[in-house]
Amino acid sequence: MRLLPRMGKGRLRRLAAALAIIGPGVITANVDNDAGGIATYSLAGGNYGYSHLWALLPIALLLFIIQEMSARLGAVTGKGLADLIRERFGLKLTFWLLLGLLFTNLGNTLGEFAGIASAAEVLHMPRYLAVPVAAVIVWLIVTRANYATVEKVFLVACLFYVAYPISGLLTHPDWGEVTTALVRPRWSTEPGYVTMLIGIVGTTIAPWMQFYQQAAVVDKGITVKDYRMTRIDVLVGCAVAVVVVFFILVACAATIHASGQHVSDAEGAAEALRPLAGEYCAWLFAFGLLNASLFAACILPLATAYQICEGMGWERGVDRRFGEAPEFYSVYTLMVLIGAGLVMVPHAPLFGIMYYSQVINGIVLPIVLVLMLALINSKPIMGEHANRRVGNVLSWACVAAVSGLVMYLAVATMLGSGA
Image 1 (cartoon, helix red, strand yellow):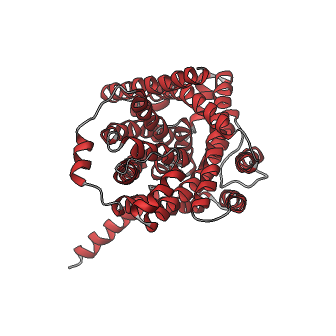
Image 2 (tube, helix red, strand yellow):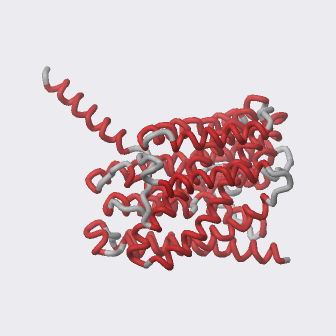
Image 3 (cartoon, helix red, strand yellow):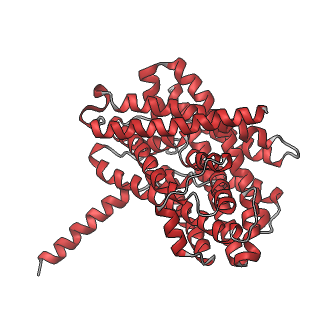
């Protein structure tokens, strides 16, 4: 009779230990379903129906491979990615890499505040009130709390992504057709279809994710002995993120595409859902956009602050006070101010900023992935935790696939712009 309580306590202790590790993987994967991501998935479902659903399974695999390497680097070395790049490859390369990431993240942060403005208008809130209030909330969350508190806030924000599965269910899709599209690839050489596929991959895997996840693993004090649970954290995060993408695609395909309409952004998708799937579905979709944009508006400036301070060797971390890490909080504050401020300026060149940031994003990502592979295969750095042969085959295949896609997207976009 005494054995059962002891077993129960042991299981409770293991559960508590597991929950203590959960965080970086779930947060990093889910925050990439931001305003730009939701816009891309809405366009894919609304304009191309279910035809891109088959790509979600290989994309989930690519996402897991990359995020797992990032988390492993942090757990084994106790250092951030920019730290390791500077130590291994020198300050000059690190400086130019950080400059590209700074511009890219600034454009993405601008996109998050634009998403907040769009969602606010769908929810009948004036953007000139919503954006400043959101900026203040974002700034206070990070600058006035320690890491444990900030992580809890971010994990709660992850829960609100349930708005998209509910929206998808409210559209009452043909599940037989959905299942067929998920397991049977539909390929087209039509340029718009190919570009959309590349866009889905590019918006799901971004350079800032590797830097933020590794920094979060280090900040949380996760070590190699905790790594088994960290892998589960990464796996759960990637799975949940892709499920959210699945339901956004399904919701828009089952309504907007089925009715013969077309959309150009996430705000248009939310408005189009109103007469097609009902007021509740439209509001849930817009609420999901607001939550995702607010969530990402916290993370992207934070990821940027980590990247720059790690690369330059400055103190960083939300557990430190401003006096202990002035550069860290200054970078974070400037990113929030510029991102929110530009959205408020009438006729600001928002598209140009976001467009060029995505081009740089496509150029920087392959570089980051190659540097990561060089680091994770280094025996002096990783020891017995370096990639093994099977891991390297998968990793390099992943790098080749992602690099080819994003470089193609960057070149095609620049050529299209020049035309």
